[in-house]
Amino acid sequence: CVDIARLPKETGYFTYDSGFTATASCKSAITYIDGDAGVLMYRGYPIEQLAEQSSFLEVAYLLMNGELPTKAQFDRFEHQVTHHTMMHEAQKHFLQGFRHDAHPMAMLCGMIGSLAAFYHDSLDMDDPEQRELAAIRLLAKVPTIAAAAYRHSIGWPIRYPRNNLEYVTRFLHMLFEVPAEPLELKPVAAKAMDLLFILHADHEQNASTSTVRLVGSTGANPYACVAAGIAALWGPAHGGANEAVLKMLEEIGTPDQVGKAVEKAKDRNSGFRLMGFGHRVYKNFDPRAKIIREMCHKVLSELGIDDPLLEVAMRLEEAALKDEYFIQRKLYPNVDFYSGIIYKALGIPTEMFTVMFALARTAGWVSHWLEQQVDPEAKIGRPRQIYTGATSRDYVPMAQRG
Ligand code: ACO
Picture 1 (cartoon, rainbow, N blue to C red):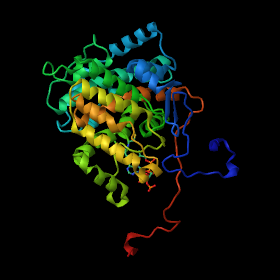
Picture 2: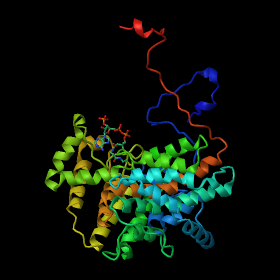
Picture 3: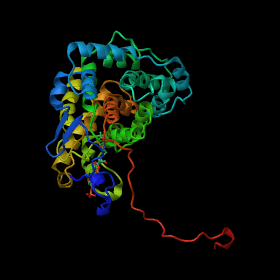
Picture 4: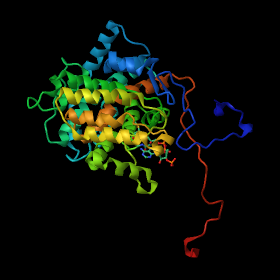
């Protein structure tokens, strides 16, 4: 690993790495991935252990602070987060300005960016307490804003956070109409959502986290940084994939159509890819996909749901894993392949899937932003380019141009 930035200028080293396939943009102690072995750890703890034994809020603490909390530390953290769940009343007017049919990700992005206008008191980023406060505010307010954006999109009144509930249940309570189907009271629903949030909480320098860091490197405020991260996450090649997977499975429709879809995905000219397959770093099973697949079966069976899309997903996975094209390119199901089926079973509408991802990834984004703020080696992110334009030429007055 060569630190090009530290080589003397005279060496003339200059690298071209479109897509950052082999370039580290920072040093980080938060998340470790071994893509060949299919290993993922947060702060050294294997994802499998955290998925089984921890909770999303505890994982958020771990990511932000580096260590698992004691009971007293966790209680304080939970109290702080709970204390900041309310949305500023004026933000409700801001939300109401959006069209009802706006995508909830568009609303989330705008609303989170606007937090800088509502909480400009905490923008002294040299003060560690102010930094922590901004991170806590983000973690606390994203679920409230996400639920409000969804309810605005379907014309329902906003529900205030019920602060006697814990993080995930509180979010479910804000999202859904009660008492039609009090989903939040079903333990498997809250457990499944908590698990999905843990698995989505961080993933080192993915596109959205790198975006947060790039914006953060300019000294921009954390709300602007996270809004930029949300924008990056929205794309179908990144967090938008969970929504795209479900649409793809619906389009495939029945297990007998799976073969056709696999053939189409192998044809480059078709412009079609198997959504939820492949990963830049994992060249083995995405460890999160294994955990999610198991939870998917559990949720459907405990909620008594017989979703034909699960059958399509399983046949698709089976067919792709046997196919030479996918084997050679080491394309395995990723975290998004089964998450959409769980969200659907929990009654989460498709256009909210990426919002759910954003909610969980906020824990990772704020942790990276906090880490970057105290990194003595951090510099403004300023990539170079390979210029491919015209060589030097003289200006021609308009009257003389052909
Ligand atoms: N279906 C079919 N072929 C694929 C797929 C796929 N899902 N993914 C990659 N390939 C093929 C490419 O066509 C390419 O083939 P070639 O060698 O013949 O040219 C080869 O595999 C390598 O693909 P790249 O696009 O170069 O791989 P990259 O690392 O840049 O992309 C990515 C990774 C974006 C995740 C890609 O696999 C993809 O588009 N997957 C589908 C979208 C998706 O599920 N995204 C979620 C990622 S996980 C996350 O963000 C949480």
